[in-house]
Length: 131
Length: 455
Image 1 (cartoon, rainbow over the protein chains, first blue to last red):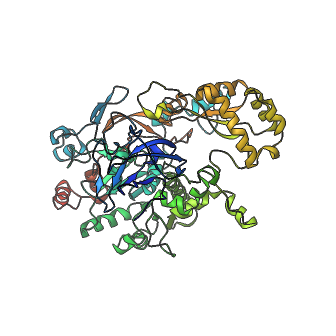
Image 2 (image 1 turned 90 degrees about the vertical axis):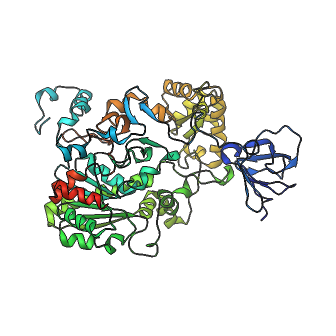
Image 3 (image 1 turned 60 degrees about the vertical axis):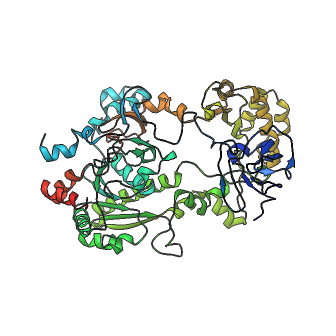
């Protein structure tokens, strides 16, 4: 599989690693990208997601890392330092539940995991026990 | 207010009259439009649930039926897959329901039923016998196969309004295909006209909100209410309704279908410009309104809608940006509306706005009497007094979950205002209430159903 003419898939001319350039970061870009497979530096430019020419070899340091990469036999490369972390909307967002007990205006909200005991007073209990 | 307008109201200014009769603080004291209508909703995701939600906001007793314990997929299909409100159900208090469930499940009663069990089918038939509306969005024909489809329901209760919602409909070449909002937008032609012109990158753009789902839910609710009218005032008969998402999407193509039919012209994307008017689009402003924010979405530069397509407004706009020569070069609508002219005019506006925030551009436009509006984000929308005052955006003291901000039905009604009583409830929260009230089951019988995992 050859991606040599693709815009947002930068296939390393040296080691053939497929570097995925995420549109969020690279849609309009001009600078140096480090290959996640062999650390080669490639100068590359994109305008509205379209590449302006094939990559040309550059010198360190790089400007950006690809968002994700795979070898030609589809082994993923996710090592930090080789690929960039996913772009995040907020610094504190980690893709995990953020338990809260107060809304942004400071009032109580049921925003954290509960235990069975904390359901006391719920409709089902009232129904069964009459309390 | 009564049919005869009181003297007090008669003497008010129109603004005070509106403020008085639409007073959102009094909406919980007033009657509800659909009070007395009972709707069963076996729906999931957004299209079907939003239909049931609209009925519930108008006062219908709406009972949502989900699979036991974990409920419907939308509870777990939130942005970022992050739970927000706990408990998910009494069986899973440590799990939660995600943000995506908001806005499509308000005011409903929540019953859990496992349709794979014959006893659950019997319960469904009992509920159908006592309900006015039945809404579902399983793949077409599934409920028919299970013995609880339109044919069977109308046999049990000939007055049932049976609303099916889905991608393509129960017949026709696409009937076996499933659909999502995004597929509806793609097949209905909406994407083809939204996004960038080929000279600007060419990529179509999706509408990020689930607009085809919410629109489909609204039109389905509208049709149900029309059928209730026909049943109760004309025929006494029920109805079987199909709403197909792809048809709903193509209904949005406005004049473009007629344009193609007449001339063979295929409408193209034109980005944030307007093919029929100029200036009537979104202008990039060079400065961020929140340059020191830690949130990258706030750090971005602002955008502002500017509308000055009448000749005199355009001349004012040109004067405002210190480019009166543009008004001389493009004095009439015909001079401006072409693509070449628009491509020349908008960059000049953006050059002028390059050292301004969207608020500064808005302020200048207002001073000069030009229609404009900064492109607001959800934080800015949440802060708007206009929405909170008129009650279409509200902090609700939810009986189960506490303090949450949510949208409310956007229409105001003087006599029978829509309202949000609760944003939603845990899975199966009303099992006992519904099964006792509508099926006459005892507490021990319901406990047995729960033990057998039927509910």
